[in-house]
Image 1 (tube, rainbow, N blue to C red):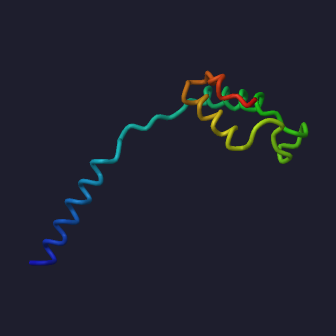
Image 2 (cartoon, one colour):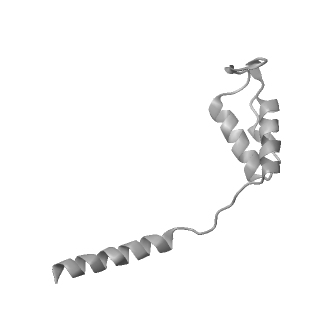
Image 3 (cartoon, one colour):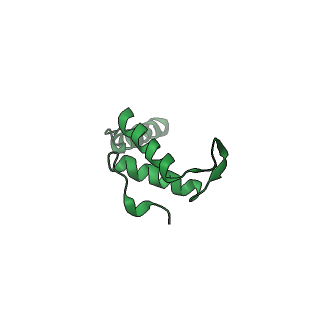
Length: 85
């Protein structure tokens, strides 16, 4: 009796976990991704032109990622308040 109860509880928990997973996934379009990548590159120019490994002249890597994510979230229109000073 105990193994069947354990199996039943496992099924109930698995069903509950599966029902809590959202089934809506939003994907960005290639056009929005390209536009945001170009805007991010313009907003955060490399310290040495032609050498992306040299780092950015403005802001940090985290600032670049945040800027890109906000741009994607706004559908390709960056939030001007997110730009580094």
